[in-house]
Amino acid sequence: MTGAVKGRRIDWSGIFLYLFLTLFGLLMLAPLVYMISTAFKPTSELFLFPPRFFVNNPTLVNFRDLLLITGTTSVPFSRFIFNSMLVSVCIVGFGILISAMAAYPLAKHKMPFRDGIFNLIVLAIMFSPMVVQIPQYLLISKIGLVNTYWAMILPYLAAPVGMFLMTQFLRQIPDALLEAARIDGANEWKVFWVVIMPMLKPAIATFALFSFISAWNDPYPAMVYTTDQDMKSLPLAIQTISGGYGVVARVGTLAAASLLMIIPTIIVFIVTQRMVLQTMAHSGLKE
Amino acid sequence: MSIETSTSAVPAAERLPKKQGKLSLLWQDVKRNRVSYLFLAPFLILFTLFTIIPVVTSIVLSFTYYNILESPRFIGLSNYRLLFVDDDIFLKAIGITLKFAFITGPVGYAMAFMLAWLISQIPQKYRFFYTLCYYTPSITSATAMSVVWLYLFAGDRKGLLNYFAMQLGVIDEPYLFLQNINSIVPVIVIVSLWMSMGVGFLAFLAGLQNVPKDLYEAGGIDGIKYRWQQLFYITIPSVRPQLLFGAVLQVVSSLTVFDVSVQLVGLPSPLYAGHTILTHLFDYAFIKFEMGYAAAIAVVLFCMMIGLNRLIFRWLGKD
Image (cartoon, rainbow over all chains, first blue to last red; front, top):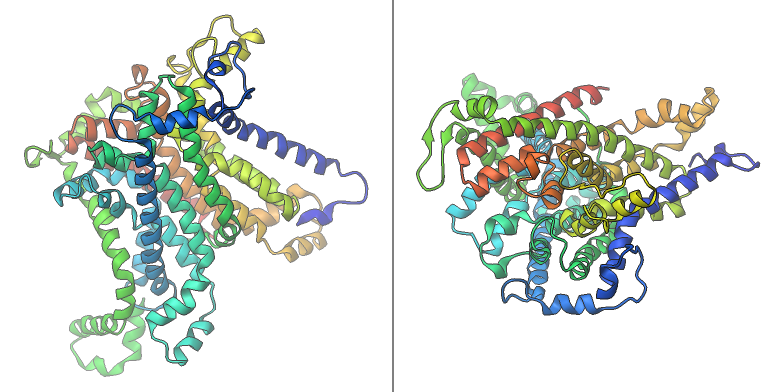
């Protein structure tokens, strides 16, 4: 972008820039690389002294162990993967639908209370949903949803940040397209599906990324809303394998499980990144 | 607002008495836009149920004694008095949370912006690799990464950090990073900083990529030569909305440290050295089941976040 500043001569500042970015980037990746290499270490390499960073004889034995061990109960590990997948996919899917539906009128219709509702959503970005955990828990237990998938899905569907990003993105889409569709006789529902949804694609990808990551990584829903072992989610299962905090046992299996847990989030980011950057350009807040 | 505009647009209704007229006009306006409200309904219902009502309920519960088994009993300000006068652990948790927030907040924020700016200086085709390097840590979960941190900071000589430090001769004895109350907060800070290039970082990156190029050309004509001049006079003013968005998210995330603390040093941590407001809240809500007291903690945290964010809005939001 500002490459025009550079001249023909050797660009020292450019070299330093790449050097710094690369070294710092590798430093940031180091913990992840270590985890990957631990996941493939055979038992003989796990407790070596002096400790070794990279794996010498990679093996898949940790992954096999992971699928065979059942933690402290008889629930197979694949069940936790299934639970986490189901809950995350529902949160992402339904979340996209209801947020896109709400973003459309907030960005493109003029109706009473519109600004009020939008300000309320901006206000909700300013605090963490964790502070309303208690009433959420009381509500879920009062309506008898404890130990159901609904308890882990419903409270997380109306996500203010994703909704805010969608509305901001939609605002910059020209009204002319909507008008053209309306003149052709399309009703609002049809305009939404035929015009709005296709154009919202970058914002939808962004929403999917953020909501998938938070749903996938969050241990609390399962911790708080479920008591049955077979309703627990992946992050919680990983805690169980490790045997509680601070215990360094079954390192190889644990690293394998952790790796399995991180891979989906990275894939989702790689798939969505271009569209995410398009959307985030409209993320600005103004008073 | 829209009430005003519709009053002037529909003069027929002015015959009605003024107050009633306004209300019925508003009602007509609402009815005319019923499709819009139908679109909004699913989101708004869930948002009300799981965000608005819980905020109100938290505030109400914070004035009661409630242990789930018996119905809530109104006790006035006792919870707050207990929190700020008698609960030494809470006061300690506030101190730790603020200490933590005032380090990771600004440092993480500045780091995210600087890295985003540096990345925006290199050609498009190389940017993705670096973005991936810096962003990936923030999408890992604290639970999954604990296997690495527990090993890196392990308190025996097999711990990676201890091993290197002993090799270099910095220390003779293994240091108990996760048990020693002096090193608990720094360790949590380091891990949190590692994970802090999140949504805000992406917002900065996107904002920086979209600063109009002709601004730099115009700046060049006006005598702006160096990159740092460009940064201060052109780039930062152009991405201020993104900076504000990032700041709001940074405030929220640096005040809600919980995961990392619980995963690394446990709940309760040794001598409560890693105890934050949120771990205190969790302790009272879901271990001791004192919901009224826990609600008071939640209200305090809520007010801190909103207050700090209002300040930031005033500071960064004005044009």
